[in-house]
Each structure stands twice: as structure tokens, then as C-alpha cells.
Length: 172
Image 1 (cartoon, rainbow, N blue to C red):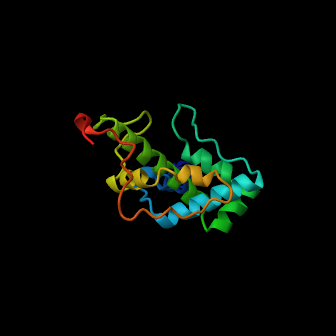
Image 2: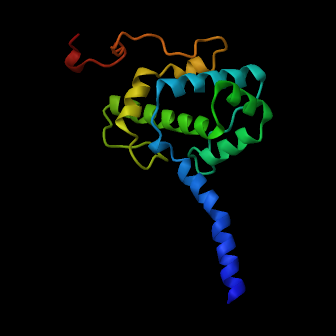
Image 3: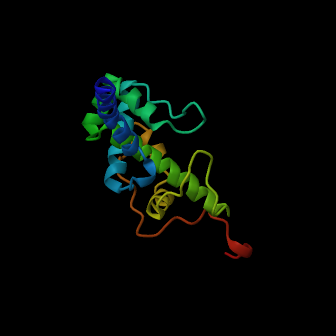
């Protein structure tokens, strides 16, 4: 019985870091910020400029595989250098990307009138702050993929650009 306990103890201690990593890669609890967005844009621009292949976003079941994305970044020296230069870790990068994608998808669904529904692969509604952040910062992905674009969001004057939103009842 002693060897079995030892094996169970060793296995459970060895699995704790994996469990902690899995919990740490929950994008639904990550809060999007302007500072993290600037780091994300800089890191992505540097990866694009260096020719580093970015991580694959798709998991085996059609959902975002954040752990797989992190592993790809961790195994790519050029990506690691780009992340360091931007002041991010691979964990920060994949959590930001996951939270941004979730916030953007749910926000767009809600704008289209699909309130209360979640896109495939998202099991809980992102925080409202992330949805609002992405409504205000949808250009972040364009800026990230455009070498030389500013990493900071353009000034908005405290108002959202509502020009592309449908107007109720045809009123202007």
C-alpha cells in the first residue's frame, strides 16, 4: 500500500502545476485593458515583422485551444523574443487574445439582436467590461497585423462610433 500512496502523491503533485495552468488559461476571467491591448498589438506586430509563425487558434473540436497556443509560443524563439520586447508573457498573450475574441463575438451577436446566446465553444458570457472594451476597440486586430501602426488605440473623445449600427425604426 505504501508504494501506491507514494505514486498517488507524486502523480498528484506532478499534476498540480498542470491543473493550475489549465485554470490560469481561462480567458473568461481575464479583464481587457488598454495597457494590455498596446502590449498585444506590439507583440503581434513584432511577430509579423520577424516572420515568426503565430500560434494556431483552433483546437481539435473547433474551439480556441489556449494551452496549445501557449505551447506554440513557448516553443518559438522569435515569438518569445517578440513577447519579451512587448513586455508580455505567452500566458498574457493567449489570455488577452481569448478574452478579446470572446468579447468581440458576444458583442457582435448582441448587436445583431441575439442576446442571451453564446457562440460555439464559449460556455459562459464574458464580463460586460470585455464586451464594451471590444466594441470600442474592434480595430485592435487590424492594428496588430499592420506593421508600423500605432499600438495605442486612436482617441475616441469618450463616445462610441455608432455610425455602423442599425437605427431602430429607420430613424436617424
